[in-house]
Length: 118
Image 1 (cartoon, helix red, strand yellow):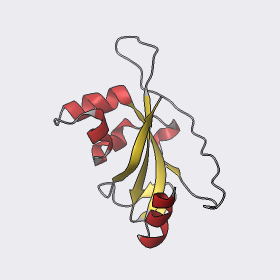
Image 2 (spheres, one colour; image 1 turned 90 degrees about the horizontal axis):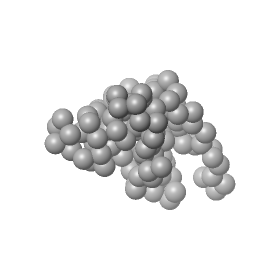
Image 3 (cartoon, one colour; image 1 turned 30 degrees about the vertical axis):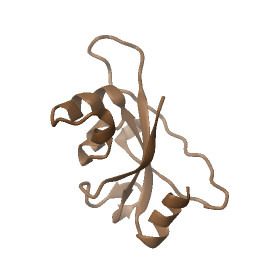
Image 4 (cartoon, one colour; image 1 turned 120 degrees about the vertical axis):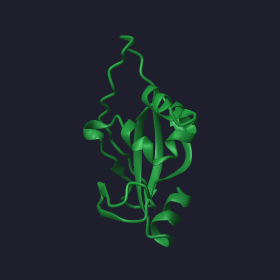
């Protein structure tokens, strides 16, 4: 939390929660020689978002009393018909954004901290 706070205040970056479909992330990352973890640090991960509407959720609110972030997930359909889904959550940051949902430069992608996989 302290690191995200530093990102927001010192660097002027906008921090978001990203939810990735791990199957898609693995497939897209493998195409350029990256595992799922490394792929989540690359701007291509933007194409693997499985949150409703493919949008990032802004992190914000009071840093003294962090709240919760609610996401509706819409995982990609599996070609194998598998109903099990793995989702990776990461904090990502952009230095510039039009608003809380819309980064200006999608290549200005910085994954931050450790991922959580469910």
